[in-house]
Image 1 (cartoon, rainbow, N blue to C red):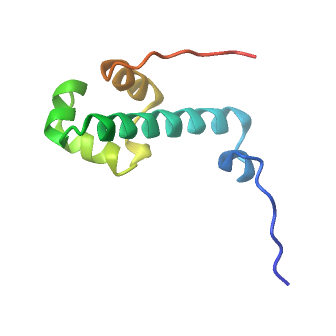
Image 2: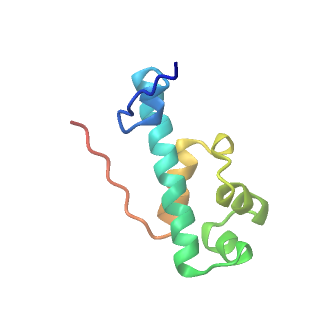
Length: 92
């Protein structure tokens, strides 16, 4: 018999990561998604995105392919700022 469990809305919580790990992974995923969206919206080539983000084209490829393990949270914040995003952190 197959059992289906509903999602909490956060895959990292559902996979039972520790709260601090889940939060870090969620932030990284959201930042990567935002950066990929920005690249698509501006219709930047990887070369253009590399210039704006001040990284190598191979790093842009890693970013657009979702290779999250290659980017620290700190680096993703830096890239988002370089892309013109404003970063806000709320502690509740």
